[in-house]
Amino acid sequence: MPDHIVSSYDTDLEDLRRSISEMGGIAEKMMTDASNALVRRDVPLAQAVIAADRRLDTLQREIEERAILLIARRQPMAIDLRETVSAIRVSNDLERIGDLAKNVAKRVVAIAEQIQPQKIVIGVQHMSDLVQEQLKDVLDAYGSRDTKAALDVWERDDAIDALYNSLFRELLTYMMEDPRNISFCTHLLFCAKNIERIGDHTTNIAETIDYLVTGVNSLAESDRPKNDASNYATVDLPLPGASA
Image (cartoon, rainbow, N blue to C red; front, side, top):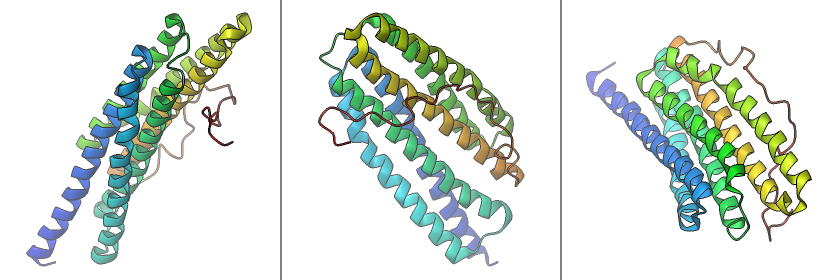
């Protein structure tokens, strides 16, 4: 292949990497801000998270379009093809992470005027901290193509599921003890579920890293370390005023 074609192709791949890096930074900030908005009852911060999702959606579409065009024009093989396909996969997961962070932010706005027992929020904050760490670690692993770090993130998903199950039971207990807690705890339960789903998407990215580096879907074909015994809250509860 002529040198100028190789150079142009390398530039195309590097552009994809930069866009993924930008998406990762936005997704990380959205999740951190959504969690902080929940704990601090910060409606303006929550609204900023909701607004930030538009940029993430735009980047995801651009990455997908450029990657498809790159495949059509360059017909890459082996590692180059995996790099391109992986960019599409990771961008999709990051876009979903942004959607889930936005969902949390919308809940913050919805419950802003309600009584919020701080001790109930602490457990959700702890789970959010763990998932934020997972997200940072898996993005670092993607940047460095570190399969060992990716495996570590993949294996930690079980702890997130276990914590979600514990929060699920705790929030149900609060609701049964005092009916006045039902509305707030229900919103908080869906916040927790959205955060748990972000953890699932970090696991998806870990599996993509393994595929990118090794050329096989060994992690994706393995049984994930799941510990989520609850099937409740898998469908998001409509916000006030929203159609069912």
